[in-house]
Image 1 (cartoon, rainbow, N blue to C red):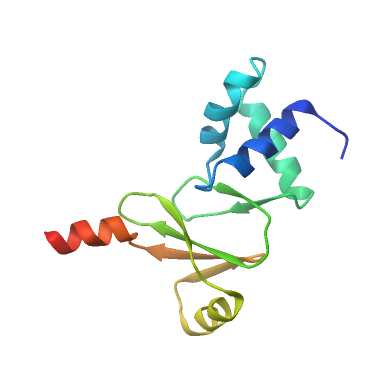
Image 2 (cartoon, rainbow, N blue to C red):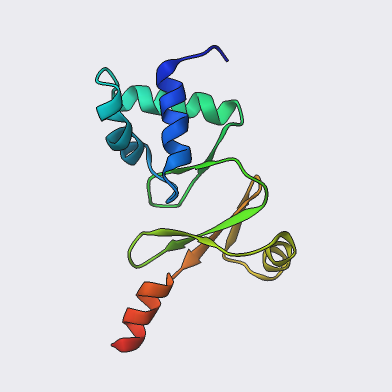
Length: 128
């Protein structure tokens, strides 16, 4: 892959944003640093980075794709109430046990995607 300042900016923005951003969120964050950047360019660069294995695409049924940096085994909880994303604190053994036991788990590369309520939403729901 040849060097592109815009592609480098998109990659750096994905790494900076720890909430697994959508392409639109990446564009909003990166655009002030690069006035010539367009949303279409962000999508093209994200697709290029995914193909190169430098960024992971996490597809969520009925929602916009999110993008993640490539790390060793890790997991994300996508909150079905607020739409937020949090990293689930799990090691590789816990991840493998979870993958074997549950039906609502999607494995993409080395990312395990969980759907449910985040702690804040669960707390709000418990309070009434």
